[in-house]
Image (cartoon, rainbow over all chains, first blue to last red; front, side, top):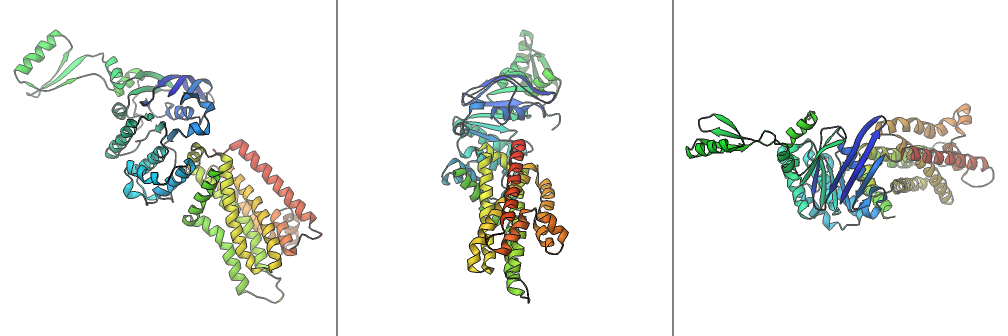
Length: 282
Length: 228
């Protein structure tokens, strides 16, 4: 669905993207993880034809991004943090503008607003919506014309955990319909919860990519098991026969309260690879 | 064509909600109706307030509305959303331009009620041409300005010169000499004559030069900045 091969982009003397490579299959949620300033938004702009790149090749919907026609663009939905809504218009009126542009019957507007949980705020002017509701409205605008690929730039940035969860649910529901989703985030929990594949981007370079679980397993250098005993004591055991015997003994004695594997998460992998935290400025 | 109609529909809907733009459109027609009916002085030329306010209306409303609409969409980033929805920049500009022109013509239609019937067609034709030039200039400012604040700071002097120039020219000969190069001043001259008869050549040439300059400026601004 999306192919990005050896893409370079610079602004003046600053290289923003350097040799970026990845392929995204149809129906997949692909997450681009990186701290602010890593080049995530620039990459979305390149993939959607909003920005030219210097070297490499970018294919979206199987076509070179430069040769996407108006009809092709109807199969792409983009939600960027910086995109606005018509403040004086209600949710319905906001969507009416885009329904008319895409030639979609107005009957689909209610259905789309219901999908994103805005059915009770349909007539509310956008200026009176909370940040979470505005995000939902933007999602509704993206979903309205049923695109094949959806780009979401930090869709849950600045939202409370409850709203974030409900947005995740909407995104996962959308994935069920066979849509390909590309999302950027600096929230590793979000990436792990939503994405089939992720790429870790640091200073314009992809430092690792793959399925979140695979990446975490790959960087599981410690290979330790953490035990919390009923006595209150915490134990860390290395993988191996001796540990297996010890765990078995403790189990038999009923001394184990909790048992955890200790593979790293995406945050710690990113820290290991770059020396930077994903959310250092959040 | 569909996208142009969508933009026009969107703007019409917004006019009712956007009081700043709404006032721009209705202020002068209402003022004209009130003044024409309330003030009658001996020796006052026919339809004095209609002609005076018409030129001010032409220099203010389309210019301000056009620049305000474009700059607001740029500032709020709704313009980029439209562009991503495959609305071409020219479709957007045409949609907003047609909308502003139509509303202004409706306003001019109201103002024309103070004129003699035989003059109405001429009046509307001249006003229509003037509105187009103001719209091009307003579009130019809207394209050039990054946000509403910059737009306002550019519109204010342009508006003051175009609107008040012809009025001040009535009282000061030096200002008249300078103002004669403005299309609004020449439209004021045409409105006072109310005919395309002889002696209008200079006015028409100055109006055409103004239009050519603003159109060139518009394309330069658009090529340089686009609608980003």
